[in-house]
Image 1 (cartoon, rainbow, N blue to C red):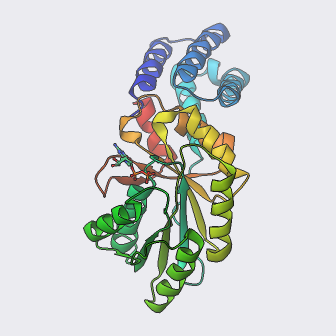
Image 2 (image 1 turned 60 degrees about the vertical axis):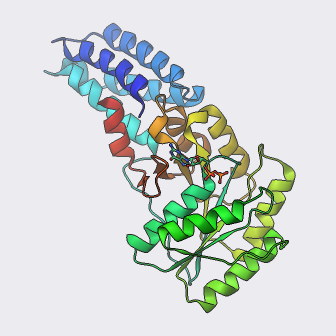
Length: 297
Ligand code: GDP
């Protein structure tokens, strides 16, 4: 994960820490290198600017350079700012604070990993939180999407709403609500349809579904490998549906890290989970401190 960025930053840090004393121009030179490394990692430009300005100000403005270990102190400042960029020190879990069934609505483009993530969360909710979940696929666009969730549901031992051919998404959502209540399910996971691109019809459908299900969580699933595109998708959704968080999938294959590092600042939404593989337990609560730790090696 984020190996390229990690290597680049590691080189800069080795040089900083290798010196006894640091001058202001040493810091500025290091910041230039970090700036390039972040841009090559596909981090959004405004985020890079803000990061570099904050680190430079702290490193030069305070007594860091006069300290006994200036290199280490600069590295510590970079670490703190990375954590901030990734969302701060809190690990944002799922919000279950609503009258059951608590509705978790999954949204995102086709192929982002929505259905897999729905099943992963279903398993997590059953195993880790000990709650009873029901999952329903509202994807009537992609052939076999509903069947896919049913099969995954069997694997993770979480019930799925029986499929009724030809039923439309809003009606499926209503039926899922009824069924969840009847079964006394604690949580209802709604796996919505994706499209290849964000379009008006998709947004109208998402709004209508949110209207009948009043979700406590609306989680946007995006593929971290798509870098800035993932951030643009998140921005498009942010204005339309009341997102409560983001799930970044395919973090296991992401050598660059641009989506993770830009997402919070650009969208204002926390990254709640990271998908780390195809297996159904390959999901982690997104912990900014741990991710920053991995980047810094
Ligand atoms: P959907 O169209 O958004 O519902 O996408 P799917 O859930 O069908 O996922 C598309 C593909 O991505 C599947 O082959 C998944 O196994 C794979 N996938 C989903 N999440 C992850 C992840 O975190 N890591 C990896 N490596 N593959 C993933």
